[in-house]
Image 1 (cartoon, rainbow, N blue to C red):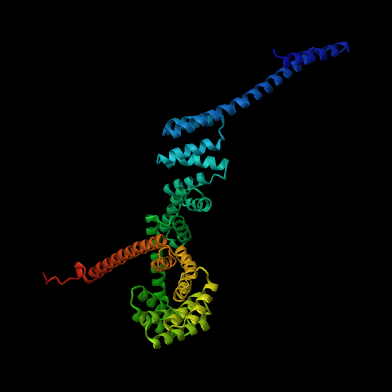
Image 2: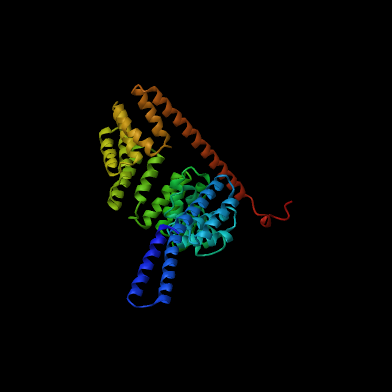
Length: 430
């Protein structure tokens, strides 16, 4: 018996004597009170001793589980997490880890209950929510989409965010809702700009959306000005400036104030014959109309600056490029235009400032690297010049390879289109 119990017993005896001296004999009641007092005291001591002991045991099991996981022994780790739950059935960490172990063993049926229990205990477990969403999606639960959306917005773990994003894109595709995948895909591209799989999915998604909207436009407004504008833009991408110009003009015949078309037509006109003064005047006229229809913009000012450069008017060109830069300091075209003017005026230090902005904002702009290399040479910076020249060559070679690949794809497409399907071939022509 310890000191605490001895004191309690002594105090109880004194209380009994007090009752007896008062002439009141409550011995049975006193015995019961005495026993209860001892039990309460003992239970309190046991609880005080057991609580730290249980907490220590839980931490010990969690520590051992972590060691087993580091040793790539998930089976032993799972036993430790089970031991934790035997001591504390509401331990979110143990439930979550058991769910993770089952998830990576490709057993979503086993993983989901533990992941769900962990999330019910602690709703802030974003990774747990993400894994549960993936499991539910794989098991065909339509509510998984909302779960994945919620976790994707909060995830900081890049690999898991990538996986959740891919799962979401696939989910939207199966649901026939590709437009909902755009925001997810853009975030994935921003975070993984060099991931081949992400880039592939992004271009496929954007192409499908573009084709779908073009089909709808062709059905709803086949003779509309916008349809003519779309055709023109496709021809620009195909390198057919003359054909594009024809369709831009048709669009303006239908709607002379169609937003954006005057500017796009001016660009096509300039590309078709830059050395022709009458063509430059025509382009300038379209740009003036664009300002009256759409308002001024950095793009319009850059094109006006380019025309002034063609005509040898550096002061006017500087005015336009400076205005474009003030409207949009991130405009690579404005930066390159200002740099070109300072180079023409033999002010390489001023040109350097804008060229460095250009290569930072558009690292794959070969012209910017080439001009910066020339500027560094003028500033007696041979090492920096050599580096920029090497980057220019690498970008040029890469773009040449891309163009070659596109030519091959285009050639194969035309060859396949020229071949009639088997059921359309003349059966008499063997």
